Image: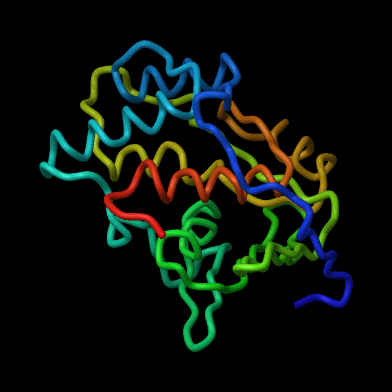
Length: 204
């Protein structure tokens, strides 16, 4: 962990997805992606994701559906292994989904800084006190194409990052063709925990 790691044991990790409101622009792009009314909350977004997977494969997503890669900006580093991912929500989900403590190590897209987030049973820690997590959906979604999990990843994952602070996020967001928003890193961790228990087939 970085020398400036800040202990955040006092941060709450409970998040009700029904209370997590999606910004109208993000919701509108998600509605286009899913071919549905814009989901107003994260709970409705999760329901759409589950419906897509069930329609295609007859089951909810599992850990095998996480979007791994060999050269991603975002990695989960466990006690004896490392795996990289396309978007930062996936490695943030891993400790909750697999009941495995570890460190999420993410390279920010604007400044190239390394942000670390440690998740363990006794709480979380972070290398950057002002870090934020972005959520977003491409502006270039084809409304006439049926959604698949792969298509959803392609239109969403490129806009889910960690930033050292809100200023870095805003500089990045100004140059992307997507509807995006940002949340404090503690909220991002809480969202990952909620996704582990609501989106996936099983959650720790």
